[in-house]
Image 1 (spheres, rainbow, N blue to C red):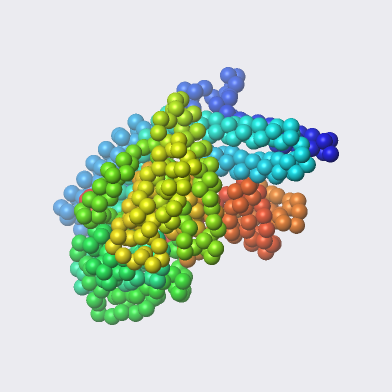
Image 2 (cartoon, rainbow, N blue to C red; image 1 turned 45 degrees about the vertical axis):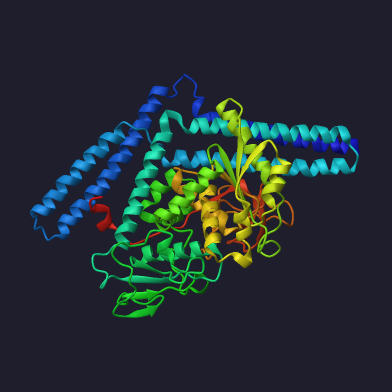
Length: 579
């Protein structure tokens, strides 16, 4: 019996050693060139600068093509307005070029590879911990006390190794000030999209504008209704139609959307038009009425998780989950607070004493537990809160004096329970918000204020621990992406991977082959497309291989996300107008 246990222990130790060596090679290979015949640091920096400048020249060339196209479309009647616009654009390109030449930017492949390594380390951690915990359970049942303790020590060592590797990878990712580039690029891309949305929503003549009509009152909760509005907005963008959001007698606030959030338009809020048809209508239809996504037919390719082709290269380089970033931009435009809304949010933050560092956790209990979601104890959330703070202390090289947690829930008993069980943490939150979040009192002004406050502070936390089966959690995660250049990895879901209700199929592609080792697994060949159903957070995901039609488990690290890149309409009119 002890011999079998020792064999299992040796196997576990070998797995841990392999994990360490592979991760170490990944982290150091770009930096471990020998001096004989290999490029020096100076040459590598020059090459990086050349790549950056080539990217800048490519972007400038694309913008010059737009300018030339505009001149050509004017029938070569180059009037003073065209000349003035041309001079203005040339000046802008000159300034843009001079700025970019002084700033390093990474290649897309570097960023994709860096994230793949990060994901690989994380998935290896999930796998090792899961397998070692299984082994530990067997040893406990057999009474192997000393070996059980040894396994526990190995698990702790693996966690510490993974923590340090994550720190090293983060340090490497900011070589030569790459974080400065990410911040600037995130700002530029967001400005571009927000400018397009503003142009779309503010036609010069509302009476003749093409419109998409959307009724906010979908029969569901707040997070679901916000996602419904964002779905409508995405299809408005994809059809180049002004979104008209019908919100009077909104269940959450009878006065309508515009009393809580800024109007979606400064020039066009009327749904009137010469004709109206239900989706999909035709090009000649002025007003198209959109159903809820569950009833949408035909389903266009522009639905989440698709991203626009014209910004896809920049977006893939910038962000770890481009689909979430794209959805977040619609949230950013939709959820602009009215002054009174901003006031009660600010007052709530002051009352809470909300400040960084802080982890946001959302515990959903009432209406969905037992149907859409499983019960999760507060201990399950706090494991990941603790790990966040352990990593933060490693990063800053000192103890975190106040381990703050913003706790949002629809169960008023969770906050006092957390404070009692974890006295070394400072929990912020309002039990009255949880009381008003119940099904009986959901559709009320006090409930609306509470959910807005919860989502706001969850999104503004440094890390998010929740269940992605919750719409509230996913809205907070989407908004979080609009606050930081790339917060795609700043979360831990206790159940689902990220998804958008009503989305088109989410797919992955195999980057390594895999031979099934048991009946529960499926085999993969490199290049296979898999429809992913979920990540089990134990090193394996579940999905269907589209080539073999077989469904089962496969190693998560052997696949990568397959982005759906789709042609959306051109927005040259918005891109070329003055800001």
